[in-house]
Each structure stands twice: as C-alpha cells, then as structure tokens.
Length: 330
Image (cartoon, rainbow, N blue to C red):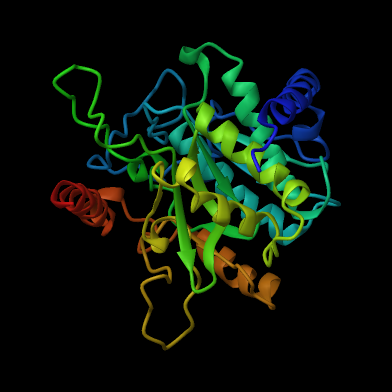
C-alpha cells in the first residue's frame, strides 16, 4: 500500500514550524550550549596536537586551538526526557565537548512529541523538514543521531570523517549517475539494524524515509515490529525505494559496544582511540556507564588520540575503496 506521504509531510511541517519558533522543546530544563561556544578552560588541551587533521588555533575566538571546525554542516540529535538524570547528563556533556571541538550543532529533545520510542523518528523528521525549509546554503547537511546511553570516548574524532566520499564526476559533469548518492550510514549487530547511532543526510529522501517510518505502524498494523521504530526503519531500508541510498558501515566506527575486562575484543567493541561507546541493551547500564564516564572525563591521552593516530583513516579509506571496487566489478 502506498503511504500518503504528503499528508504526513504537511503535518510535520506544522510541527517543525512550532518547534523552530518557540525552541522550548530543545531547551527545557537544561539549555544546550551553542556550537560556536568554546569549551571550558579545563578542556583547553583537547585535540591541540599540531598534526591533528584541520585543527587551527584561533586567538581571536579565544578557543586556544580547541576547535577543529568541519566544512560540513552537521547537527547532532538526541533525546533526554523527564527529570535530569546525573548519569545521562554526564554522558550528554561528553557530546557537548565533541560538538564544541568540531562546530557541530547540538539539538536535544527534552519533551515528548509522541509516544514511547517513536519520539526518535518524530524528532528527526521535524528537524529534517525544518532544515529543508531553509535555503540550501543555510541548511545542516547531515544529522547524527545518538541515543542518550552513548559516551564519547575520543572527542578528537570528526564525524565528517565517516561520510561517504563525493561521487566522481561523470562525463556529463553532473556526477556518476551509475552510483546512487548515499543518504544514510547505519550499522547492524546480531539483532539486525541498530539505530542507536546513525547518520542521515538532510535531503528529500530522508524526509520520505522518516515519514514512512512514522506511518508504518498505522498503515501496516499486521507487521510485527520487535524493536518498534527501529524495526520499521530496518524493514523500510530493505525496500527498493530506500535500499540503494543507505549503506551499512562497520559498527565500531560510531556505534561500538563495550568490551569486558580481560577478554579479546570483538570487531564491534570499542577500543582506545575509538569515537564512542553505546550501552545498548545493557541491563546494568548506569553502573557500566559510570565506569566509562570516569575514563572519558579524565581525558586520558591514551584514549583521546588524534584522528590520524587511530585506525580510522586506513579503515575508512579501505571500506569506501573496497565498496567502489565491488560496485565496479558488479
């Protein structure tokens, strides 16, 4: 059954207008620092190494070389409901540090829009529609969603490093038409898609995807959604209209799970120098998060490696190179 996309888009346009006018849902209880703010003075030595990517000192701004501003406009979305929880607020602060370093715009939902876990796609759709209403030159280009049970372990990692390389120019000069543009980067674990952390491009394709996610349970009520909106997203990404524009990348890039002491780390588990750790499905979440937060808050040099010193550059380059070779051979 074809979904009534236009009806849902118009509805969320109205929601976006209200939110972008009042801003109350973003700032209730715990105002977010703007992406142009400098980090606290105690964080002034983070990511200052001279060989760290595009890091440049800015004496005019007083940031003491802290920020490594990406040339890609990125927003980071998350949701924190109810009364502030100390553990989750500490986790959120690790994201604030990362945002300030890289000039990422923080967008945090503090009040519910709809019911339960469906607030995630509702909020993402709201932001997407709001951004699409702006001139292209003023829009965010990519959105990074992070669940609140994520802790940034290495704020020196730029989100832009994970983004797909631009398509090579075609003979027509309009890009390689044989390779569909990538609009979403997602990861999977043993249960399939895990959308606790993922990247989505600000694009009409994304508006259609998240409109379809919001509509899924109403127009396909007979389909079992084991993981609610996550399952809806996974099923939709398998459909022809969305499959070609979404890519599953290695989970450890930006959605790694914690490893245990004295065990061999699996490919999906975080290690020193990695971006973040996600406590998905952890029945002892708060206690385990506290231990990792202590490490993150120490800003230990063996964890906060400059990007070029991590395994990321080689792994990311190899992934996209192999993917391109596979497409060409196919």
